[in-house]
Each structure stands twice: as structure tokens, then as C-alpha cells.
Length: 135
Ligand code: THU
Image 1 (cartoon, rainbow, N blue to C red):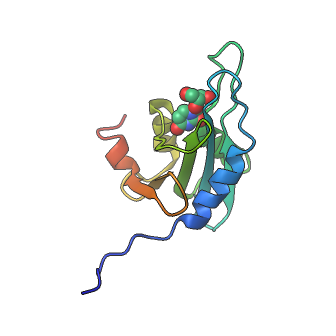
Image 2: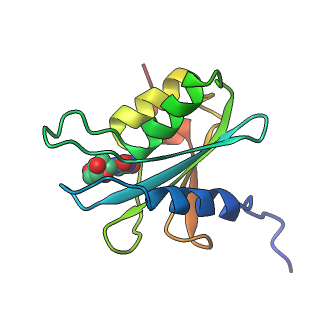
Image 3: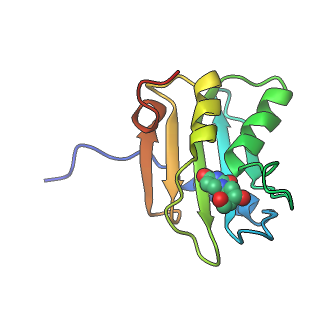
């Protein structure tokens, strides 16, 4: 019998995140991350991690994408895809700071966080699952 549950197809959003990963500036960690943020109106904002020799000013891919979108007037977000790793992609989950930034703008029960190893292999979480009992 066919499985009545089918996972939403996020392969396109993952592809955008993987393309953004190509711009990663990560000479210190060599951990290259890309993100693609989907807005309610269908627009996509992408971002990569941008490191700094002082380490502290480093910005994650997710926050780059979110800050780009907010700075252009967008605040209605549906989902974010994240792709990361050194030479090849591994499971890459958003850090605590990025989860908190998502909490500022996204609906915890419905905002989808897609962690992609590839366009075919990905895990989907809600923000509420990754940041329970949020501030
Ligand atoms: N990083 C991201 O950009 N997003 C994540 O979800 C995890 C970590 C970056 C920060 C830093 O440039 C590098 O990956 C290693 O931590």
C-alpha cells in the first residue's frame, strides 16, 4: 500500500542553499555553509557563513539570509534550508544563536527548518522542535 504521508519537496530550496554555499568565506573553520530562506510570497533569500580573523564577528549562513531579507523589508518566513560541511556536505543543524534569531521572526509551530545532506536526503523540523520553551 502506498504511504499516505509524503514529505514536502524541498529539493529546490536545498539546491539554492547549496549554490549559496559556494560563496562561503570560511578560511578558519573550512566548514562551508549555505542557507536559503523561503518567504511567504515565494521569494528566496540566500546566505553563506562569513568568518573573521577575530572569530567573534563570524556570521552564520542562516543569519546572513535572514538579515538580508529583513533589511529588504521581508518578515514573513516559511522555511529555511541549510547545507554545510567541509569538502562534502554533512548533517548541519542551526546553532543556538541562529535559532534565537529565527524565533524573533518566525512562527515556532509552522516555520520549517530543512537540514539537507543532499537534495534527496534531508530532515525537516519545526522551529519549536529545535528551540523548545523559547525566550
Ligand atoms: N555555521 C553556519 O554558518 N551555520 C550553522 O548552522 C552551523 C555553523 C558556520 C559558522 C562557522 O563559520 C562555521 O560554520 C563553523 O562553525
